Length: 238
Image (cartoon, rainbow, N blue to C red; front, side, top):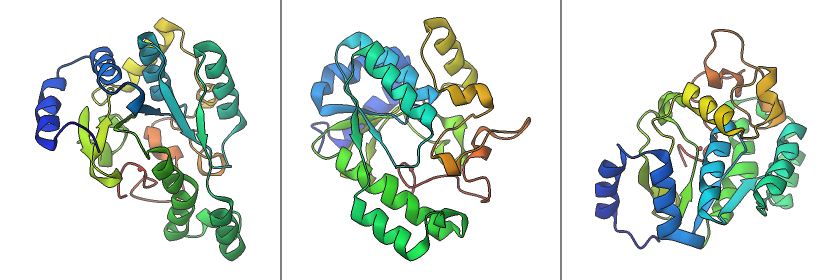
């Protein structure tokens, strides 16, 4: 549980709405220190946050390895370790959870129904995230409001009621896609090579495809489904 009370976070939320991402990240590192962790799936937004945070000293970075990630994501993790000198904390799903799920529903169960896709996300992503967040007071994400309707009201700092009322910090909440890439190009930040192949949102390999011209950036996630493009990490319990 954070040392900040919920009403204090509400005040900070209003104050930080006009703050730059750099100031917010600096504030978070200073106030939470090693009780803060950056959640990274190594998408381009996460790389911006990591690059900014690295200026404030050593930061904790964790990722969820679902076992179905693209090789390009693993390659980028190695680049991050080398460039930023960060020992990325990797959390895996529990083997018994995956074994039971695959035994009962098959390896590619997610194509068969929304319910089974959500089950796969739950076992491979949501449950490992809960372990990753144990013992910390705050976590930082690359959520942006324009990513999807379910994220349109995300605050730059908020109480995470899903994960034990710890503090959740989203420094890029008001950034646009163009702002993200402007920063990456200007600062020469490394990024996932799949972006050069038409991808705009990158998750597990079998659940992600390039985006066609004119499509929404998250259209390539679970493209066979309609509606909610979330896995459960941030909304509903992503």
